[in-house]
Image (spheres, rainbow, N blue to C red):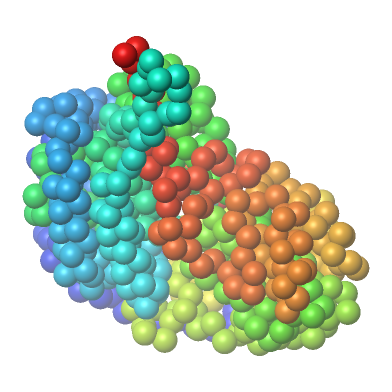
Amino acid sequence: MPVTQTIEVSEKPLPGFIGDRAPMGMLIGGDWTQAASGETFETVNPATGSVLATVASGGPADVDRAVAAARRAFEEPSWASMNPHDRTLVLLRIADAMEANAEELAALESMDGGIPITVTRGMVADAAKTVRYYAGWPKILGTVNPVDASVHCYTVREPLGVCAGIIPWNGPLTMAVWKIAPALACGNTVILKPAEQTPLTALRLGQILAETGLPAGVVNIVTGFGETAGAAIAGHMSIDKVSFTGSTATGKEILRASLGNLKRVTLELGGKSPHIVMPDADIGAAARNAAAGFAMLTGQVCVAGTRILVHESVLDDFAAELATAVSAFRVGDPFDEQTMLGPVVSAEQFERVNSYVSLGVSEGAQIAFGGGRFDTPGYFVEPTVFAGVRNDMRLAREEIFGPVAALMPFRDADEAVRIANDTEYGLAAAVATSNVSTAHRLARKLRAGVVWVNTYSELDATFPFGGYKQSGIGRELGDKSLESFTELKSVFIRL
Ligand code: NAP
Ligand code: MG
């Protein structure tokens, strides 16, 4: 592949939180502690390949300690039975503290995950908003059921108990908050396991939680690997729920591991989301949305719109506009304010994305644009669009998790829907059209948990999020998270 551009990334001073290079501990029962085994691992800056910090590598014994602490905190003194208004106040203080430390959280997220600083600032702001949204939920109401006058029937929602969040490396602070905020609002206690690639913002959030008066043990952060810490959580007999975000393959492992105690499981998994461009769309705007939809966060987004389906009559115009939109994305140093795309998260992910580019070529698709290499030690990938893709190629079926998209023509709306739905995933889909009836008609037919019209990737704390088919089980955000972090009790009283 041709070298297209050199990228210089300077080393930045490490935020004070990382401190002297001693291994960073985990937060268990209010204490910062090393792994029982003494093992550690390193987290790396993907823009430079250099080591940022050494972190405790938790295993089953540490998960046991975290579960015991979370159980104690659930029961006594009880986070669950605290007046909900007081829980609200704690959550509001957490949101304020996240904002007060926003620049540091953004810098940590950018260093650990390679996400541009302008993007991580927005992520921190949104994360604080989400905490505030859930702080405003001491309003989880039950029902009084209309029954015979000689009985009184009512329902009440109660916390589940000890809830675990297992989260991926793409948007770690966002993911941490999606798990922690609704769990706490419902009166649960939490164990969070961040991904091995990006543990730092979760640990800093743990510090913030402790400083804002959250009782010890209510949130525990266990760092470590999926096969050790993650598997110990997934199979633990005393964890009541696992909320997982990550790959479909690991999601299936989590579900299997839940069988021991039938713990509640919600899964937010992968996607191969279609973006349908109708001939009546504003082609320039559709191209900009599609470009952002597949390339933002360097394609490391579960909802990435990686199958771009375009009406054959506008394909050439659209392809030209898409190339223009993508070439406007500045790839580079995550700390440069002009940068729009940073590196992918790790050497492994870098190899994986490049191998899919080679696969596309060997499957007979053509690189329409992109496909180049950068001269840099960091894990930078050029956004790449393939033409001549058939929906049965692996390029069109498998989640790549890098900035690689397939451009495919269609003849009419029925064919667009058929191709769009011909996937084992069903996380997101988008339609670009200027006709409101077309928008509604297609939105109904698309088998996906989220449908965007004339936009892409926009989310809101009130907007339930999750997948059809192998993209997951359950929904997060909005009031749906409150359902999935509570049990429903029905009480029947003969008067
Ligand atoms: P992954 O395996 O799904 O990792 C997600 C989380 O699960 C991490 O915290 C991971 O820990 C943990 N984990 C791994 N194996 C586990 C197990 N057996 N039991 C319990 N927890 C376990 O994803 P990945 O390996 O980081 O990435 C591989 C591919 O998954 C990517 O290339 C991408 O295609 C896809 N992915 C999708 C999403 C999404 O949001 N849809 C997010 C991330 C990745 P470790 O970090 O220690 O492995
Ligand atoms: Mg890292």
